[in-house]
Length: 160
Image (cartoon, rainbow, N blue to C red; front, side, top):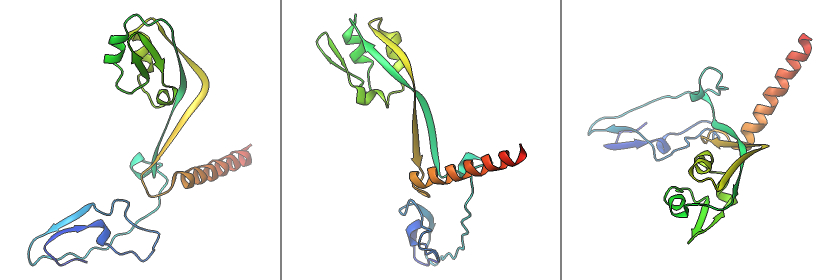
């Protein structure tokens, strides 16, 4: 409920369940003019994201682990110009690889094409990332996903 002029923010809402809160409290819900008021009842329902990703509590993605090898780089200046993510440190004609930045980079194939002194190989490892939208922690998302997978395995076992 709100009856004051100005913005009504998500954090102004009250919930009967203390665990049920808005992730972004400062998110404006509505702007009221003078003499306006609003009374809204909201219902939150836990889903599994089966029908649409918008019902998912987070964003998972994975990629193969890349391994770059730096040999004799022909044009370090060109590499410096085209390396926005800090994968390489370039001092004069010396090029060193920052392995910590390599994991986050999406430009590894580009770097291998940019200079013949850089070679790319993929390992057998997979890098899995999980970003929570705030409804559930990443740990809780993995626990729920593991429980769901175990349930599906039991269903499949019963069918065999």
